[in-house]
Amino acid sequence: MSNKAIPIAFDVLGTCFDLRGAVPALCSACPTLAASSDSDSNSSLANVVVDDWFHSAQRDFTYLSMNGTYKPIAQVLKATLPRVLAMHNLLPRDSQSSTLDPFTRTAETYSDLLAPIFEQLKRLPARPGLDAASETLLSSRGPHFRLMAATNGSLEMTKGLFTAALGEDHARRWEYYSCDEDRVAKPAPSVYDAIRKRLGVHDGDECWFVASHTWDLFAAKKAGFKTAFVTYEEHFVLEDVFGKPDIVATDMEDMAKQIKAAAAAVGE
Image (tube, rainbow, N blue to C red; front, side, top):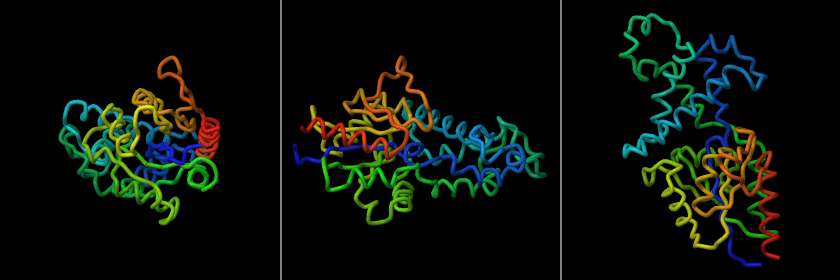
């Protein structure tokens, strides 16, 4: 078995950390939403709104990048949240906003109200099994792995999330890459090439990409990664659209065990 560490890149937002951690802050800002949402239900309106916000921001972030106008995803998330709330008829009807022409309103109109939601993004909960997965893959037993968090988000926020989830010493054993560094959004092919280069991957080398988004894995596989799909967000593989991932896992710990077993089998 080779002593060279096998690189594994992880998507961050949605894969390693749950965007629905912003739901309590969102409900506090929007009483109507809190009244209509069951916090114990995965089908609650609050969860739907957060999913809609993230998906639409990801779309706009990517489309801006495709047209040569990269903007950090934090800026896009901040600008688009009032729009998503308006689409769901959830913007508060206070005296200030009610006197404004809807077409002249901006995200700044609601900045004070929505600031706690953006702050909550810095404290998103880790996905189940992230700590166990990290321990498994960085263990001295069996194949050796090199772990990287590869994110559309900022380096500062990403490092903060991993430090909170894993502890400072363990988080330091990870490497970090942000699309902000090259100002190109995933799923542009150049992003995955940059990740491979950062990890020292050459043609023919084994390397993995882990995500809960099939579009991300589709692009990663085209760039030469083996792929691991974690099902807790999108649920369905959609093989006829995005192809078949090498591994399908129910959570992060399951993913880590499967990758470790696959690497051990290759090395035998």
